Image (tube, rainbow, N blue to C red; front, side, top):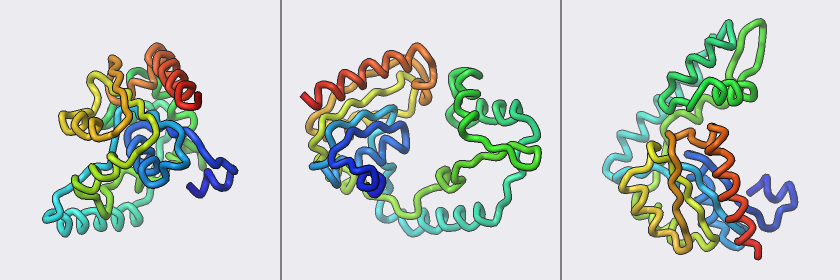
Length: 204
């Protein structure tokens, strides 16, 4: 919201993938008067936990934060090594072309080695997670039209679909591919058409 204020955007559209989709849902719920439309790619809401599990999970998350703050990245000697590592990640990219496109903006050369310039804490567990009831309440409060584009072999589960149903004004579209389906050229073009149509309809 600070960024929107800085840019002078009184009302705006939201587009997010995965964790970014969760952030979009939260913003749309908390500031409904400022959000014109929401487009989500293979995601809908933050992960939830049972309240009884909070002490254990919170301690684990804090330990992870402590370890990552003490760890120094050794980087990669070759750009190709970084591509291979990213292709073998938890959520593999559809092809090498996608990996190159992503890494061109995600890596920085320092001292003859390639380093990620993203914050490593983004991959850690959240220190504090919401309960399922809290997430449900947030989703029910979204007023803007929501387009949820899911990957056929992505991360969506039965729980995902049950959460989507709580959003008052939503529609779902499923495309072939895995979690990073939007990185494949053909699918990206299809998604772009869907999202443009969604945004155009929202501002009529």
